[in-house]
Length: 246
Image (cartoon, rainbow, N blue to C red; front, side):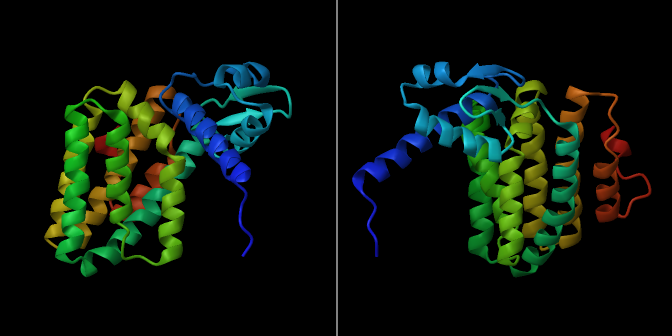
């Protein structure tokens, strides 16, 4: 087996650090959507050479967080409402499926893991720690799919990653967003504990739809999120799927 040199490992470490620092600044709004940045200035501010910076920007571009021109300017992407809608419509369709497959197989240790993730969110919410709250939220949603097939879980994981920016917008702009989400998570957990897959599925679908509709309403109230509402209707089998979420 070919061993990586210490220099190569150090290079990857620098790339990771730069990527994580920039990603955090974009997600928490320190660098606002639409901001144009110079790669030269970024390298100077971060104290790194252009090589790890370019690689970090490539990773951010894969997440659609920036648009980067080689050796030139970087622009933080604006909020793309079509992307929000498509992403959450897909999540509404896939995550309830994974949950329906998971609920019948839940063991007590699985329920305990869900409870720990729920409690972690509550503690982070009380401390107003959005980063810790996000970790708990991510873990909770991952666990809801724990007994689905691996490719389904991988797709869900990518969607959870891709929607972090929009979850943070909701946390930062909507009063009591954490408390509302924690209440919805508690209801989902209760339905899982009671092995009520139908209730858990509907609660999860409505929880995801609420996030999407809230973010869209904050950014562009005139935008009609047809795909989100259609996905919610298909999952919940309601004639007016989102009337309570308008």
